Length: 285
Image 1 (cartoon, rainbow, N blue to C red):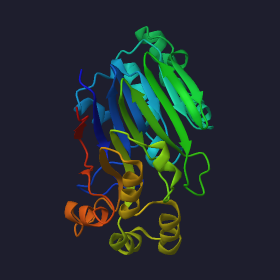
Image 2 (image 1 turned 45 degrees about the vertical axis):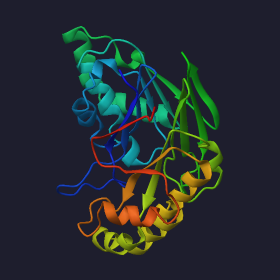
Image 3 (image 1 turned 135 degrees about the vertical axis):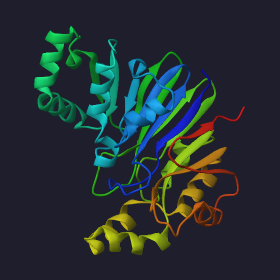
Image 4 (image 1 turned 30 degrees about the vertical axis):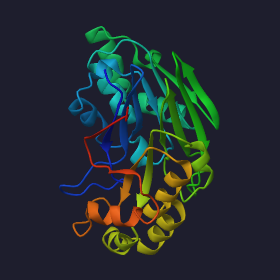
């Protein structure tokens, strides 16, 4: 299989609206590995639509425990189990990931126990290995190296950018973060930087329709990056391609790709992709 990134879910935040995109999840196929980064709602359907057999799930990485990144983690693993996976899956996440997984299995205990007996399935609780990580190198196997950098996403302290390197190819996911200059060094010379982005002109309309407007606006401005700031990180890092993802707002009818491009072009002149659900991004040879 050729190396590729698939943006499964491209919107920031947990809300779903008619005709809108799904929250955060990505598929990375790199060095023969099937890697899922974040598991917001829709990740299972997105993987199937991308042509992935759920039985081949391999590595899952969670950047932080906000619901739009983790809500469908348990359901993805459980659905893969009912689809027939019988080999171990390794789940990497920040502190608290193991707690989430144990509680999910407790909630599904009736179903899990009955399927083990009735359908002869292996115990899912023994198939999933949990690795809780902090900063630094968190995985190295068969030429694939994964590193983590703590980023600035208050009030969440355990939120990590991730860098994947294999055979001279590299991709970095910013996770959710306010403008964070050290990210440029972490992403230095990467083939692809997937960076979150908010668009200032959409924020007022977004908070107006969401409710709790003042507090939500405060959070968005303190915890996320404007598109122009994402462009600055990409420029400083000298990456080959910038992918704007985790878009806020992602479902405003008055905002289109041209608006995102206009904002990011103030600081980034290189190759640019504005994420949308199901979009495939290849690595430049």
